[in-house]
Length: 109
Length: 168
Image (tube, rainbow over all chains, first blue to last red):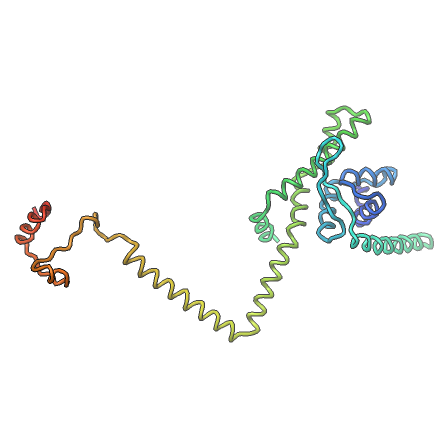
């Protein structure tokens, strides 16, 4: 389960980014995207994805609605809000600063 | 936090549970289909998905807690705010408490009286068969001046009124 650990704090950031770039998606679509785009390095566990999604929904970063998919199944689709975009910007900046700092330390040590 | 989750269970909405279930089911189905499309056998896909979902009940519980927490936190904040305001103005609080106590007491007393006098049946086996017996003129009877009835005159009155004597 080491792959999951690597993702822990960054899951909301990834979700916001994907929603901002790809538009509305359901939970399964997000896991598929994250896994494909990270070349299967990042694996999203359902057990952490859905609680995270619902927390973000409570925080007002994303908005959910039920839609019917092409094969006539009901799916809960999430969409980023204006507050979510603001949060994404802040989080992304913070993430870049932290990783740059870690890189720097690794390079000098 | 255990009393909080117990409170949440008491108020949990079935709709919320159903929606969480449906969302997770959709996820499982989608993944299964994807795996089958990639050439995995349906059984194998089913097994893998089940393993991946792990304890979906636990996921549901966590998601539900997240949705209920804000509601309970705001309830808790409201309660604390209420207590603080009450504590701040003790005179008003005392006046409110005393008038509530008096009003509740008065209502209870009035109800107890009505209950005993009107609502409850008389403490005899057949209250419908009780009669009020008087002697004398109709005027005297109307004024509730009832004389004493000894056994014998009572029997006589009873027979006259067509009642069976119980003194027997």
